[in-house]
Amino acid sequence: MPQVDVNGVSLEYVSEGNRDHETVLLIMGLGTQLTGWPDEFCQHLVDLGYHVLRFDNRDIGLSSRMDHHGAPNIPALVLRKALRLPVRVGYELTDMAEDAVALLDALDIPAAHVVGASMGGMIAQLMAATYPDRVLSLSSIMSTTGHRSLPRGEREAMKALMLKPDDPDDMESVLERNTRVRKALQSRSYPKDDAEVRATASAALQRGGYNPEGVSRQLAAIIAAPDRRRLLSQVSQPSLVIHGDEDPLIKVECAIDTAEHLPAAELLVLPGMAHDFPTHLLERIARAIHNTAQRVSMP
Image (tube, rainbow, N blue to C red; front, side, top):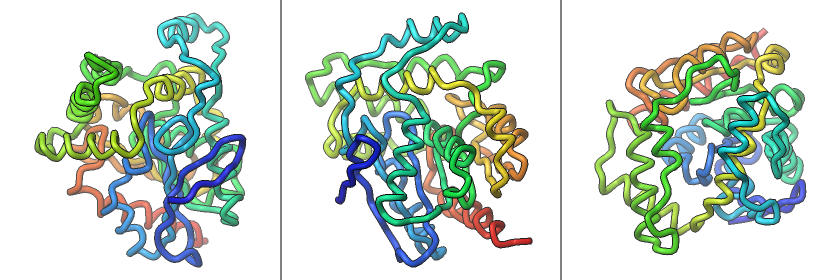
């Protein structure tokens, strides 16, 4: 797969569909590679007439690892944020939004329909607010404004996210940890069997390796970010907020809050969906994104 050097990092990306068509830019979430976007979902978008572009964020997959920033002290950052003290991190979500814009620049794409999941939704929100001429429409999936009044994720989901392998030098141990995390966040109404979850986790591990410090740096960027309510109020592009009513990590109230602060937003709450992409819902999600994109040309 190709790479481009932009904004001080190398980004691995995949381009699918006709480049002459409008682009859908997909931005994935915390610690998740571009392969976190199901191939079937991407094909649905291609079939709907889009050029689909997805990439590995910095510090994950085959894109640049930002090891020179070191490993952040997550508990200390959380405490400082709770006390409303300055939080200093190696890079911020705004830097990751700049990465995405720079990727569009490198590929001569003037503007795109931007779709983000979880942390990727946060990045997509920032793109829409700060680079409005580059974002045709915004779709924020399983994400949040980050306002401190919103409910936290369920304890078990948060605990799973922070789970460490028994032996970080043993890939079987790492695989077991990654499988447990995926199972903890998947939709109970659309469960995947253990073999499928493990196979997906194994493929991701073989492709991009294990980079816990990189995930910690991404998490630090999330912790450091101010809430986006004020910025979202400035977004005029057609917007879509998608969330599952069973999401244990980012509660559905976060989606409601996001939609309330986007002036041109529609809210789609999917019964039975958690913090994942159930195969049964992929076509519906792709169609909803398409319908939002179609609103761009409406009077």
